[in-house]
Amino acid sequence: MANVSIVADIRPGKQSQSRFTRHILGEHHALLLDLYCPFLSKTAMATLPSGIRAIFGKNGQYLKLILPSQHLPPLLEPDGEPNTTNPPLCAKVRLVELNVMDHPLVSHKLTLLRSVDTPSPVFRQLVEELVTLMAYEGTREVRIEPTTVTTPLTTTEGVALTRPKPLVVPILRAGLGMLEGMMRLIPSAEVGFVGMARDEETLQPMTYAERLPKDLSGRQCYVLDPMLATGGSLGGTVEFLVRRGADHITCLCILAAPEGIENFRKLVRDLDVPCHLIVAGLDDHLDEHGYIVPGLGDAGDRLYGLAE
Image (cartoon, rainbow, N blue to C red; front, side):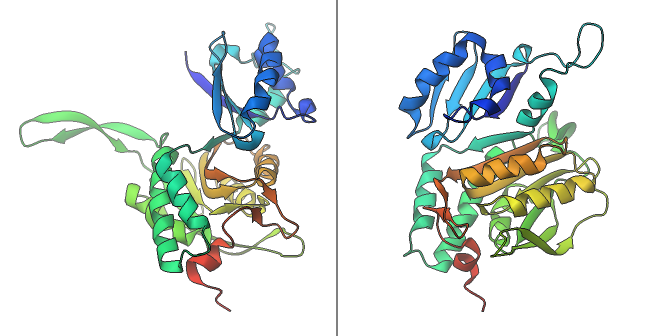
């Protein structure tokens, strides 16, 4: 039986958003709430008697559930009519899967990136190395097909990436700093670009450039954006790709704020396309200027300078 991952929010005051979570967990929902408080300051996992695994995120900002698919409510009633009780909420929750990486090398490189004493050349190198580690996890569901290969001794069966090739889409300009690390892992992928800037007054994204295929039907896309702050730029880019036909999108971000993740979910929940979000670190909050705290500063400026 296949497993399904969902992300839910069971923080105090957020209970109205977790009806689907309670439906899935049944009598175990109260147990999760009892477990919740000790895990507020770290990532931890609990396994429930029914086989459901619950992973609590750092600072209690999210809860990831890994459950056998038989726990999901049916999409149709016995008479064939749509199940109107849970499917809309179910669909929205399942559309974005959050993966906060938990690896000592990722944490080490992220710590160096945060330091104000790290110069731009070292910062760029660290970003490249970190993204390669993230790409390993981010490409876990890259599409492959069987192939035959000839070795020096005989022929054997293997796999190859399917066509059309994956498309890597850095969001300009800071996303460019992540491109080399991603391409190191999948050098045969193609590259497109989206230029988005944030209006510092409204905090809303503005598209100023794009270089993408007109038709992305059947494409897996990998979007690169170092900082998921308000979520507007990343959400706008995903929407842009879906409008052109992309049917599976993975986003890689070095740091994310809880507000950005929540806003990103709202922006993409009606697109009906699976979206995976891979982040190296989940920080505390946004300040009044829309910057991630504790963060690492402006990623674009630290990669390339102020360019004023």
